Length: 163
Image (tube, rainbow, N blue to C red; front, top):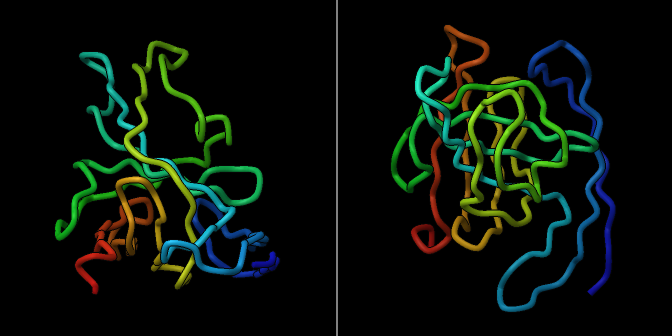
């Protein structure tokens, strides 16, 4: 086993037209048929208070440099379901390890899953990542809706279904 740094630059406008530059440090080698990716992800269940602007939802957060790319999933991220995923502003890395109340009376978050991930495909309108989590182990595909830049479609296929 050894470590490899992968650096990429993509022109991929998420919330702006800036160029995306990132670097991932990965441990190369296999143990129990898994990858040890250093880029982290978390899925949080965000319970919102009654009357809040957004209903309770699941947040998918992918570590990219000093921020978390974030999508609000309208439904639980289950295999075989296509789910509306609204692209949110980047979040602080703090949420990778946080559970509890949110400031500003925005509700609270509880961890559903977390782990590492690796990017398999990245384009302006499509992102595919392989999640290596406790519960979610497989490929996530996010495809931008052609009508709305902030609206994406989320789908998940587990490693066991692909075998």
